[in-house]
Structures are given as C-alpha cells and as structure tokens.
Length: 411
Image (cartoon, rainbow, N blue to C red; front, top):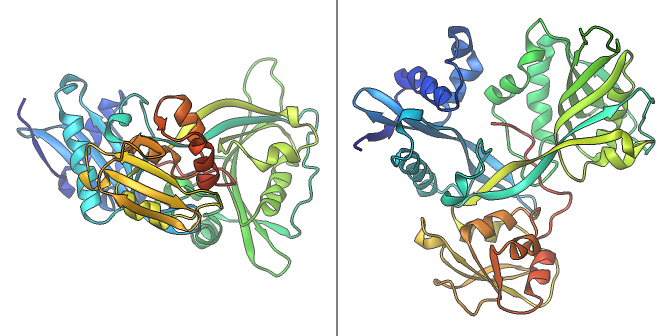
C-alpha cells in the first residue's frame, strides 16, 4: 500500500482529529469542542505526523514537548506521544509503524532524551521500545463511617478560588509544586486549561481549593467535582471526584485530603491516578476504607538517547559497579554497554557486551529508568538476563527511586 507521511498543516488539524477519533471508535468532535482554545493550542504546540492516501488522511501520531522529572531532580526533554491511530479500514498495512518511527526519529534528532505515552492498547507500543515505568490506582474512600486523616498535617489555611482567579493562580502554583515525584511533567497553559476546564466554566459543581502556609506562601491545591445520585432508593449523599491533588510535601497533601474528606453532604470520595505508595492510605483512621478499584499502567517510557538519559539521573550507593548491555533496533547509538555506579553511568562499549552483568533491550532499560519498575520484576519476566549472580539485586539498589514515580497528567 502506498501512502504519504508528512507534517500536518494547520488547516488539516480538524480532518486529522476526526481520523484519530474514528480510529478509537469515537465520534467526530463538535464544532464547539474543536474551537476551544485549549484544543487549538494543543494542536499548534504538538509535533503532528499524518499519513495520507491521496487527499484522505488515514492515520496520525503526535507528540507534545514536555520536561520530565528524573531521579536526582533534573528535568529532561520528553516527547509526550499522543493522538495515535489508524483508520479501521487501513490497519496492519504499516501506517502506524511508519508514523511512530518518523515521530520518534524526529524527536531524537532534535535532542529529545525521553518519550512517554499513555497506551490505549498495551500490546502496541512494546515494539517501539516503550515499557511501563509508572503505575497508578483508581481509589474510593467510603465516608459513611466518617473516615478521617489522623496523621499530622501541615499548618495553614484554605481558600476556594473563583473562576477568574483559577487559571493564573494554578499555572504559577503547579510550576512550584507539580514536580513532587519522578515522572511528573511540566504543563503549558493550554494543558492547564484542559485539566481545569470544569472549574473555568459554569455548569458543574467543580471547586479548586488552595492551601497556604503560615508564611503566606501557597504550597498546594486540589480540584474536585461533586456529583449527586439520582437513583430510586439510593443514599442521598454526594460523591466527590478528586481530579487534581498537588502539594510541595506529603504534610500539605494530607492537609488537602483532610479538607476534602471533611466536606459536608459527601458520602464517598473517588480519585484517579493515585500512586501505589499514596500517603493517604496509611494516614487514614481506617485504612480498609481506602479501596483500590483498579491498577493501571500509567506512564510508558522509551529512552531516545540512552547516554544522555543514564548520565542525567542519580543513583543510590551500591557496590560493586553493575554493567548493563542494551540493544535498540531503532537507534544504533543506543546499543552498547554501560558501567553504572553511585557516581553515574559511563559507556564502556558500543556493542551490547554478552559478558555484561545484565543484558536487556531498550524496553528493559526504559522500564527501569525512573526507578519504579524493579530489575527483579524484569528479570523474573525474562526481559533481563543476569550474567553475574547478585547483579539484579545490586541494580535494584542503584536505580530505586522513592517515592514511586507517577506522571499525574493525562495527555
């Protein structure tokens, strides 16, 4: 099959968006949705690659430019892969492979170190070098037993933002507190507009509340929506959906949770994208009242420049050094062997040395990179081969990052 792959022109965004939505079995966007400033800005600020059969778009892949926090505190350029899809009539003809490879190569050529994504289907992206590097849970807290935070919380006050205050306040605040974990990313204003949409327009019972420290500095915020049941014979209490929760430290986060859990008229609180080591669970009077409703692969990562990525993150003290051999079928420069110690990573060979302590593919090193997926898990699953007894355990010490990684921003 013959098709043309090219950078999408601005006048083609709407047609391409409809193709992407059709690929995911969604209806086309309405004129109102397409005209939203956040939507238009998201297209203008993405790298958009589309496939065309004549004058008809048949597939698409795009990436947003982000900065991603890695162990040690550095923020590395990351391509946030998004809007990937091929028309149902044109699947399995090489369109997706061509678009993804072009997208990743273009990003790598510009010096982007990492790529990340949220997978609609988990079976697709492994062949492009991606692997799960962070997981999250959807949780529910039943308040009918009046479950409360009993751990110490940060001192301070709360204020509820008006619609006119919300965007400017949160843009500035998130820049200071939004990198609380490895894996988090920066947010352009259009992304804040998208995340805060329900609070920026009238209609929903949506609220944004800021925590302010005793010195007068804002140090955290939450956004939540309250829904009311309309079922015959149902309990009249409301359901609170927490959509945002960001703070400079766990004590401030727990203070915000205490505020949410103490809302009048609310029977249950739900939240998505909570990390596996969520501080709230251990801080509740009744830990069983914190119910994990589902576990999800949140952030998939792919190293585009292994040298730059390994050299930018920090490592924990461990002895002796661990050598890791990596093979990458897409980027020859990423194939090699690295010696890793607490002092950093050094390439020792341009080949994947078969005598290395650990041998893996680009998928394995990408999964372990943020420090949340353990080398032991990867070894047990056959993704990593151990050439020296004890090397897996030593690599786990070197790479581990706590708190566990989480992106926390859907894109």
